[in-house]
Length: 383
Image 1: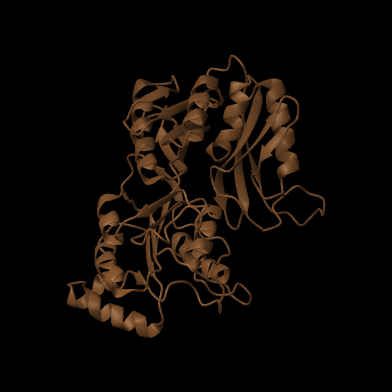
Image 2: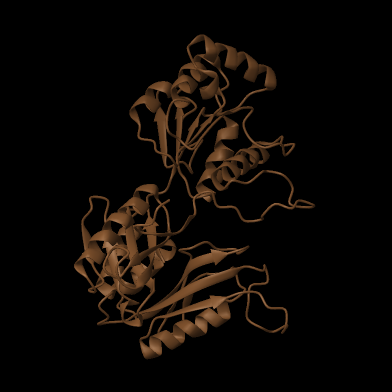
């Protein structure tokens, strides 16, 4: 639901009634992950997607029905070749979808409205909804903020709300969406409930060091992939808004000094395109010791070997060097800045999702990887 927060927030502000269908769980191959959503308002306008087109028509009708009767429903869609016109996923996967009406006067509307407003502003927030359990609990929501404060609740048992707040906070810290199983009294006591936790966090950062022509194409690619992109270079004549109109931020500073003071996290990607030892060595010495998702450096294989020797001389360990993606990017035979940006972006996506980078033709590996997915887990169970 939070993946279409901007549009849904506008609907809430305009006072529209709507129903939102959210992917709760995925089994096998499927085009969208948990949290993907499709919403339909009372006029029949639809936004978002839950399957890339396979079951959208059927889910649209479920949303219209939920708006009519005010009831939440959990439905499953899978593959069936018995009927060429059967509604199902042609990719062979199975998806569970929760459809929730959000109408004026519904108890969850203010909570969902707050969650959508926070996500639309780019603020971190997590919203929890019960998707498996007593029908009377479905449709209620609980919003959790990074400081641990929360809004809403399930009204079943005080301990249930407290437990979900703690668990949702952990999901939010990791920027993840997934389900957990919990007893209706907040532990293993009582009937089991399945809770969907959706997290919305600010966009991940891409920091591009080196204001060269290749960087301009990479900035555009980074924006396309949803990153907040910063360009950093010590040379003011090159690091300009004119050269990088798509960048969110342009910093004129020595790269390693900027990296020392800026905020990074486990989703940040660092792309070093300077291939100049006076910039690269102090920058990479620091970068390879930070808890970031990706560190890549441009240069020929000869440059790579020379740079590694220089890094060893300043104390970089073999374990730290093993984190460095150099020469940067996947082997696409790229030559132009745009092709090179695609090569780098492909490696970043493969690293993020657990892909191999090999051609899918003739391969027997899964098409859809998700290294960040969170499987359902049971509270109070022993690992």
